[in-house]
Length: 596
Image 1 (cartoon, helix red, strand yellow):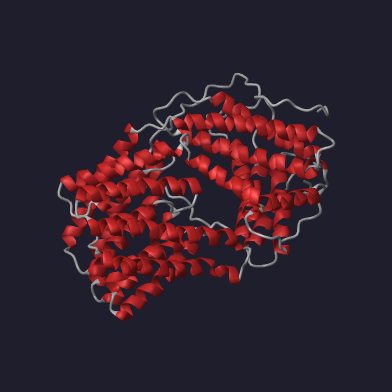
Image 2 (cartoon, rainbow, N blue to C red):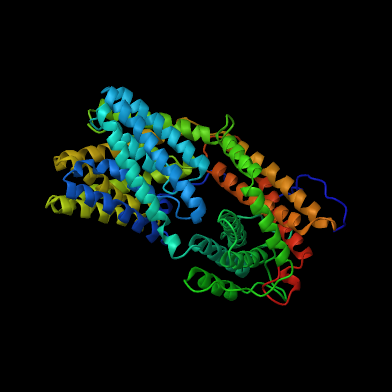
């Protein structure tokens, strides 16, 4: 490539093979299929048990187990932030606790001022919509907005007086503070645990990509298409997964605080993973998948972090990381992050149609259940709120999962109810068991987790006194079916045509990032740190482009997507990543896997 600057522009679009329809089919089998458990499933499971057990047992000793519903609101905050480095987790969880208390305060004040079911449902739907858009904009989760909606909606229909609210909020904030401590306690024994897991995932994804990187030339079959045997080609998917994992690892390391020797070693390992995915394929210095997997296993373990061999460009890369970390932590960097958050919440945000879906769906579900005489319409509100995912196809899958899980869950509740009524301690133990089981199972599939969530939610009502089992089961079944049907009906009526606009913006951003990476890569006067930042920016834009494309492909009613331009932009972006890495001394020209 010449040293002349590359003009920003769109990649050329060749005639591509016929693509499958943009809208994915609705397959109940795929929606209910079990996945392997998350590699960190035990962390939220254990955290929520510890964070709930201490307040519950304290209230049990004091004879005020009826107040456990308020402490539980704070204890559930321990479910959040387990993928974040501890410095970022501390700030994020503080926001979660304050947000939980704010939603609860609105619900308690509303419940103390009015007994109108119509008003309570309207407030519950509005709160659910606000919580949905805020959780999506801040990307806090899982479990996202569902826990917030569960707490605030349930509080709306609990008897309340104004003079009781300060004490109830104090319980929530106290339990939330304890949950904050529980979630941050592992930092005392393994300060870089989240970073190590993020880097291990990047190494594992890079190893998969090294085994099957897929086509690399411009005339290759487009990513995600079918090969000659009519089977899905996994190569492009592996490269996308590797790009996303490497990008997530860099973000985790950039947010982790000041560099330590362990974090410096982790940064060197991400350099290796990045080199393996940007320039995969056979060659003298091709990435060794076995070595990448061995590094991942040692990184994930409790021993010392492996030290990769020196690689050309590694020192420059780490210098660039330090410079980027300093920019992000500076005042201007924090302002830029706030501006980005405001753009995600602005008038043109693609999140707004989903918020409108949540508002109308929750309101419709609540009013329909109230019209049929159901005594707890907040269950229908929460059911509808839980359906709304990034697009309509995913919302349909969630509707199936939620319905099946709740229906099976009421059967589990009926079986365990006699045990829970042996005594207050048995009730507390049952709730803690199902809290652990829900987090242990939900990463395999949402419906499986719902089988445990449903009896736990029903048992919470027992803290305030016993209820007829038949009434609880009947209301829950009716609320589940009506809430899922009404919520999904609202989702189909409220279209999200902004999803295609997000794809267009992501395409433009990818074109600019690709042009900048080529320009800095071809400029001999460009600083190494600038080249590395340009390459990381291009990787981030490719991850955002794929996320935007996948989201838009799951919407049913929208204008046609620029699919060929999207696929061409992805191919061009990955070619640029490989080319810029090779010009800096990549694995293709180095004797070891460590070349960058």
